[in-house]
Image (cartoon, rainbow, N blue to C red):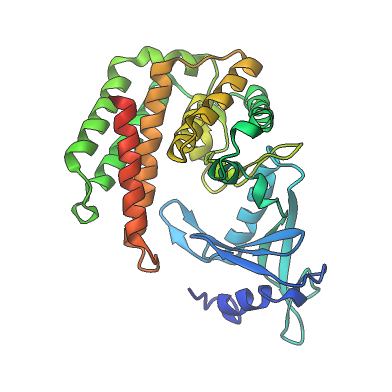
Length: 339
């Protein structure tokens, strides 16, 4: 991916940031991880995230100023749940001699999010994969209480019950359209049955949603609450919120908890999601009804299936079959919940 509008191109910036000499701590080596939206450079103690100059329907990082604003938004929003992790924004400069520098005195060329590096072995996804969830129950519940206090103290978002249900219906219809694209090869009948059942719940069982909206339960949450974003430290940290689209962060905590539960079940440990839900209820006094949680689990399963299958549209994806299988797995999970 190139960015001709920025002198030297993005490839030169990535090549520079791969080098240990780029960093003040002088690490022995730098690990590089490429994601769909960023490059992450890991030193011994820290992590630096460089945004890709990309454009999608929901975001535009093509201009340097847009990336700068997004870096500051990412730090500000993630400090809500991981204040000790997000250290700030660092500028990448072009020095008078043409060389690149981090936090130099030259002209700004790009910006990076600077973070404290977290121990990979303490991420919830790793703990579950290693079969250590039962031994880590106390730490997991500590993370659940940290999350629950965040929801309890969050400011309620003003929205009408009709508008909230309409958002959920629009999201369901969007997922239906995408998942039924013929080239993806998914079962159209299965998707249609799931989506239609969801739309009927929204229409017929308004009492599941309207009282929660009226009670002020809609808040600005995390937006992408998955086990890979939960770190089981003595002071738990929950990272990588969905920073680029506020609308996707406006939700019912029951929605996010159902999503986390879905992901824990996909990894083979549904009990972990129940621990989070139990600690949420203990801290907040809010006990979301079972049918509401089931609705949200199906809603999130359809959304994750869509995100997974979209990878088939990306020619740079090396293993499209893996994402097609993941989309089918989400649809299986949705069907098991809806049954």
